[in-house]
Image (cartoon, rainbow, N blue to C red):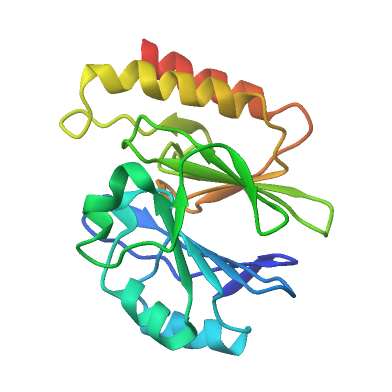
Length: 214
C-alpha cells in the first residue's frame, strides 16, 4: 500500500480481467478505518492490519464483490456496506450489515450518495476529511481515463439504453459537489485518482455527460 493523502492509503493495482485495472482505498480514522471498494491481495490485507485494521468496508456496487469480503470480515470483524438494490448479488458472498438506500451521513463524516446507472445500486461516497479536504469515491459511476479525463460508467452490453438517462441524472448530482480529490475504482492509464483545482470538477463531469449522451 502507498499513502496518497494524509489519511488515505491506496492498495496495489489489480487487473480482474484484461483492460480493467482497479485499486481499493483505506481511510484511516481514530474511530475505525473504512475500506472503500475491495482488494484480492492478501498482503495488502496484512498491511491494513498494521494500519489499524478495517472497521467498515463500503462497496460502491456489485462488481466489487469477491471472496476476500469474508476474509476481511473474519480478520477484522469489519461491517460491510452495500446498496439494498443489490442484496441478491451480495448474498452470494456476504450480506451487508449496513444498507444504503438514500443520501445520508454515516460514521460522522462519510456521506453516502446513491448514484444508480452503472448498476442499480451504484453508490458514491463523499468524505469530509479532518485534514481539510473533501474526498469523492465514485466507484465505476465515473472513472478516470488515460488522459486524465473522466468518463461515465456506461458499458454497452453491460448497460441498456434506460441506464443512460439514469446515469446522466446521477452525474448531474455529482456535478454539484466540490471534491478536492476524486478516487475511482476502475481506471485507465497510470492512476485511479486525481486532485482537483478549485472549479475544475464541473468541467470534468460536463465532459463525461457529453460523451455519455452524444
